[in-house]
Length: 334
Image 1 (tube, rainbow, N blue to C red):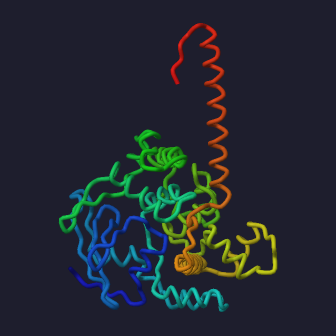
Image 2: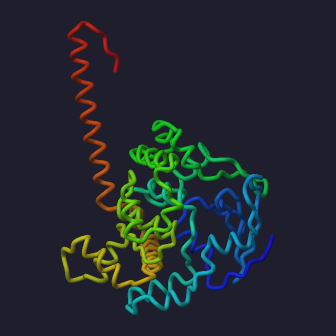
Image 3: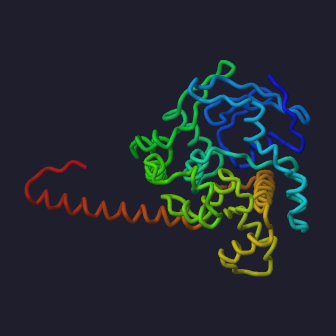
């Protein structure tokens, strides 16, 4: 194992803050995948002790310390970022509670695919889906005698059937994930090239993908593209904004919340959002409240309703077809 200096960093809090969903507790630390490299980490004060596992021979090998520093955002000027937050009681409490939490730099496709799978799901369920996708479609890697799996490529997901994806507990999300994977694997959507786009254009391109609404787009912008101003609004953050910043207003439009968050929390709004989110979610755990943590509020419901309508139409069409066939004396098996 090698030691890496990691001041102003809390490994456990960062991995438990709803950014990534595949890291597993092991011994005194955590094991997970950074791209196609399996890694074991444990933290001792301001030092990360790290060991890397087997990597494919075809993969260019960067020094492990550089991989770790980049992935965990150890180059982010965290003190300056936190100092830029609004000076109010809610934000101050979140900042104090989340000391050391950093925004992770995730591989773009993995981040996009994972958050498409997160719609209307709690963190525990997202972890189960991520693990199932990795086991079914990823490539095996070993570290410390244990077997782990890479996140499947867009090409591999594109080749899978919707039925195979639904077997990973994706439900209606399966068709969205598969359709987006086909766009990415065909080259029609070049996720790497999108890095050159402005925030507005990047959000527009992401929202045009199947299964991606404003909330998921902002998550991908924040965690996959490091657009630190991006401010995802899910049920937790909407509740915080409504209760803490607009307590006297019974009704406030979602658009008003988006406009407020963009201006009030400033250029590091993504960090502020993550601190508010983790603080609120952790407090609710202590109170025994179980709520969805990754829902694009209305878009996911709309998708489910649309799926239900389409299923109803297909059912009606099949029923009419059966009646026609039965009237012709044919036997139809359901």
